Length: 552
Figure: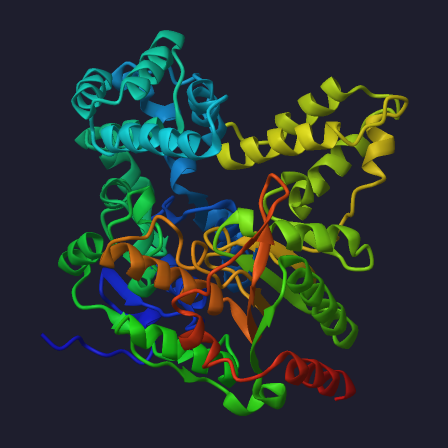
């Protein structure tokens, strides 16, 4: 069947819309314009439910919806949250229906992590990682369905993982929830027609971002929460969450049944011609279609795509610092993402930027370096007497957070713990707060350098992207063995590269240092020649390019 073509898919009269939006093709813009259109379809007192996967994605979508709708219509008509936050709200409202205490604390990821640590602490690194992975897999697979606690116990017994069974037994005896329990119980509740009907009456429309990252469980929750005017936008080529239960092919098949044939976007509004050439080549290895640039002549010098090899990880990291320094000198508003496949590979980079005090930078794995969280801390401390103790600060900060906003709650707890480490023995929270860098802007990505890994960078964009560590064991990851796993690793590469607007730079090092302090030789990534070959600039070329941008 040939899909009907609309000049603007956001204005489609279809009750349900599926759109495939490759990197930079206006996915968030489409969702915002779709929201404007859907408001006219709402009944009195109805809202639009917008679902995302993370706090940063929520912030991005909220900013765009706020801009498109204006503050008054946004507050009146839109609820933006992530899946676990939505699940927590469902449990708090209706948990008693299935015998749950709605006042039970809503857990973050750290609750389960702490429980698993009791079984893995003390083990050598390799066995500890294997044991942790096996426990997580057993628990996650047992909870990706509408199982009650007894059925989960039976599933864990069938898995044979004794540690997972013990952790689940401890959870039940303590009367607490773990992170995966939220989706399981929300799905159970929304499978009750009377409960689902309440949400379907309230949410007259729904927006779902990144449909390729949905697990069947999350898809079921979404479809049960709103029965009409549902919009799903994403890109199967950016599906990198199979380890978390995402099933892109299964989900897309179901969405085609619900929505019909997808509308495909093919024009990139994000990337320069140089970056787009790399994106298209990598996408082609995954049977993806080429994208065209919306305004190819608008990019200074056509953008940049470079590659470089260094003797050591320390040299590689220092060079990235030098390039970032030059970029910021040429444009103080530039955003620079330094993205690795896995967090461990960013070690030399993190150390180099820690010494680069002249550059504003954030480590995304540190809650205390998140600008929004810093603002929360500083605002809370400013309202309190200067000699206030840390317990009071903690109470005030947490009191301002919705109990169902579990990601923000957990991030705040982490930030408070990290902040407490800044307080000197003779100092106070107020003294420590003066050390924090406060950024007075609403943007999800503020100017400066951002240090992150591939999965946390999903859905973000930066003027420049550096991808260090193009070595075997890291790219592709050491656990990728099967064809399907290697294809997902290549999709991770595509995601990292496609975060770039003006320029992308891939690098590798011939030697690194182990955690024990021992240097070792690396092995070139099997994909280095293919990717570096489509990033034609050398390190010297890149320096000249940045200098020319500065002169211009």
